[in-house]
Length: 260
Length: 264
Image (cartoon, rainbow over all chains, first blue to last red; front, side):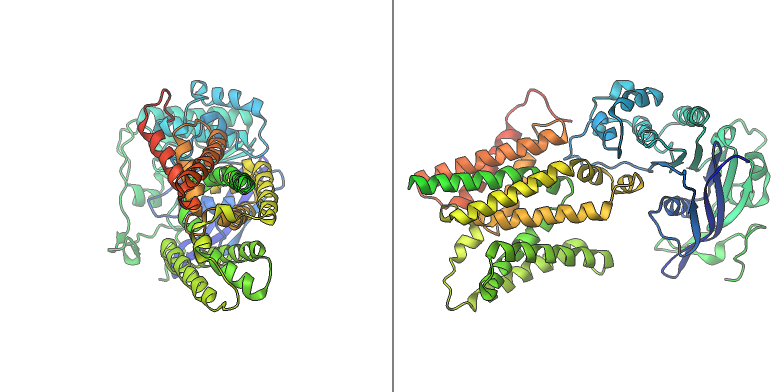
């Protein structure tokens, strides 16, 4: 097996009396693309924030190996409209960046023509590419991408996933990303971890797709798998304030929190 | 008279030159109300300074920094919304300051001068404070420009990239506190924030980059001081408010006149 970069061990996170995550184990290796998948509110983003050190776990530990260098792409970029900022200046804010790397990186993510544009006028897809460029400029060996294709149309999504794979092959870095749609990322993913407050199932994309726990969450895929229909089945019930009502939860076979 | 005017001009320019660039951060980070709260508490600093017989500028800086720390702590606890918290602290500290001042029987305080500023009452010592404090703020602003801006753009990205986020945030508050302390003599506690945010807001219309916006804000602040002093001299108007009126006029001008090249 290739070099380990970081390990999440028995991570549990509790906000007040709400257990958001329990017993999560994920290991990230050099050169491997791991995709986190799960319904809204399943704790995917929280798990990523824990790895990044932005969120302290209530239990368990995060092991970051000494060589680890993370390039992080947040879900959204909100820059106050009162702040005039060009793409070039935005990328120049990376800590310890070599200004000479900015142009080649913009080339790599396919937006060299936007170097002097204001960040506020970029489209959804351009913004995602800009954020990817910023993550790359940190010279990472692990890319952490929180919904990298958000706000991008389907053909753009495929392009972005392909770009991420190209970058992985070029840098031989590890990738951890969040996705809502397994079918779109299947071709580019080595390992899928399906999360719904706990790890429901994990393994190769094919293995996860056929797993009963995954199917319980996302429905059984139709015969025509080339067409990616997003068939998210809601497994739990929300109350008026949006809190998950526990009794609606469907337990997968690996689920170890049966004692509610 | 001429010497008095020169001193007022030099002092005013010193304050405006540093309040402008720092004001850009106040605008970007939406800290206007925060600045106002610190400014209002400055009067309490004045009262304490008289009571304890210590240097007034020092008393104001200490009080502002202390209040900034209290604010950060209370904000983290999230007991009430931040703007409510700021409103409570701003007005109760201002009132406390006014009450404290009323106890000072043996000292004559020109309250109006502290509330609205009195540029013409600037002493030689005040000039030392303005230029000492101003240069220190400017030097720190230049030295920590990139971390400060990185934090303003996105705190989480900055943290992941290894910037010392908490320290930088504290530094910014400290800088605001120092500027308020030295600017108080010029425009008074009630008008200080305007000297920070109006030139910065005007500058937004004229700039393409953060550096441009910060430097133009400094220049616009200086122009406002010149204009305000001139008006004050000619029409015998109060200096502090005249400076602010002048800044507001420039703001109106920038946003109503057609521009060749619009930012964003």
